Length: 324
Image 1 (spheres, helix red, strand yellow):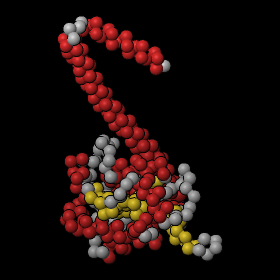
Image 2 (cartoon, rainbow, N blue to C red):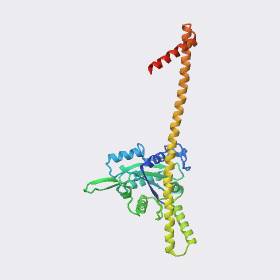
Image 3 (cartoon, one colour):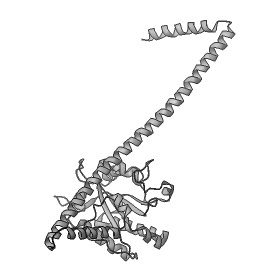
Image 4 (cartoon, rainbow, N blue to C red):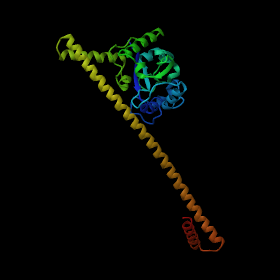
């Protein structure tokens, strides 16, 4: 049986450029070896961004007068990755796969009273091992201020309010997607939302369940048979895993940002090289032109070519001295 998979990641302003280049396939090279660029033309947008994620964020914030103070540490955008396993998509075919992702898009647009206008981009990737949908949205909550006025506010912590916020997301998504006619199983209720994105793309939700089952099995073999002790130690292992996964995400963002800067430097360097070649060619052409001019004038006036060059050089030198 296949599983309905939905996973969230939060981003700060500094992350948006790298995420944009990756999701919209603006990079030349990718660290993710699962990407087959020969199939990138098959990717499609359910909602295409008209500009960079940073620019769209600024435009939406201004257009809807969104409240909320934005700091360097503030999470300003969320990304939901929605998928199942490769075999499931192959079994339902291309058109049903499209309907699955469109249904998922509609779910996100209405979840937590968000509003489609706050979705920045919805991109389906078909150039990796398993089809999946990236939905980028601004976590906007609609509430009243202290004076009782209705306001819309960028507030990631309020949008994902409560320790069980991701569990509720998975519950609601599973309920919605099965009502749409997709025969899928609900994922494990264990907090697996922090599993790194690359790992999520490589394994199915079924395999995630098995991974946690194996972990629990090994813990039981290596510890006491006391259930309460096992539960406590199991929570410790999961907490450690999530901590490491969180560190991985931070490092991944730094690496992607660095790679993007390196690509930009390389691109600028290539432009400078092309300009240098062009100027060098133009310089050579001008030198040849000037030399031919000296030759023509010397013949025309029956005057030594070298003597003519010497007179012109003297004139130019004196002109430069006066100009200073």
